[in-house]
Amino acid sequence: MHSRRLGELCPTAFVTGASGGLGQAFCEILLDEGVCVWGTARDPQRLQALTSHPSFTGITLNLDAPAEAITAFRAAQSEAGGHFDLVIQNAGYGLFGRFTQIEPERWTRQISDMLLSTLALSHAALAPMLARDRGTLVHVSSIASELPIPFMAGYNVAKAGLSALSESILAETRRTNVAMIDFRPGDYRTSFNQGMRPDGHTSDTQLARVWHRLEANLAAAPTPAQAAHDLRNALLRRHRGIVRSGGFFQTRLAPVFTAFAPASLVRALSARYFNAT
Image (cartoon, rainbow, N blue to C red; front, side, top):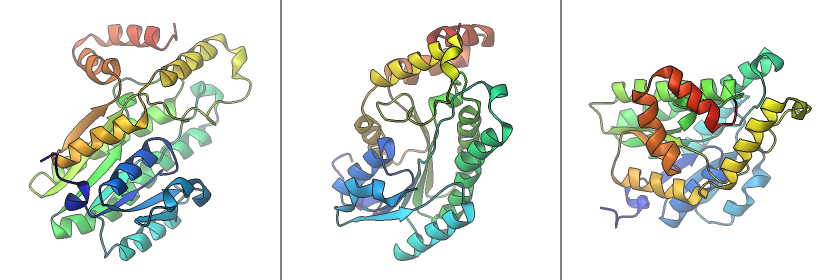
């Protein structure tokens, strides 16, 4: 089965957060295998690495304007013939800092952007798939839904909520030919950390230690091509449910440990892992 090309299985795809990192890698592997891809970014200029491909269409989409995002999605869906065979919900961002030192509005906005706007887009994508009894919806959540990252409360909440949404959709689509994948990446060597570091937190030694550990983890992490390869294999297998992707510790050892170890021990070792002690 793995000798097949993705274009045979899902001729059209819509990918949010396509301007870099995992989203760009997903687009590249889809385009290489004959899929027509609509990819989004807040700033369409950031899609230039993909726009030279004849099967790629760039879309301006901003999750903090959900009504406009739905309008943009529906327009792209109409161009694709009224439906997409594959929708990958990848867009998101980090916000690093102590929960009580960041205004609640910023946490609320992050959760709204990453969870509620994604929910609305998935709602718009899933209905045509169910009507055709065909298609795949992918939510790119995170290992953080199982092993929360210190000082990233909004991100942890949004990703855990996204995994819960995926489980809900899995239950509702169990007797259909529509697949739901909860894709949970660990650390990848991307620019994810750029732009999420609040000013002035370096005087907080605990935050500084955790930040340096996060930076070191990203520097030592696999490249986004591995995530694209893992998702490709899951799509070709017609997989449903959770797919973990990344380094051995985060995607193999940590989930087993968090599932069976006492919660107090998990918290203690997580604090040590992230250098938050």
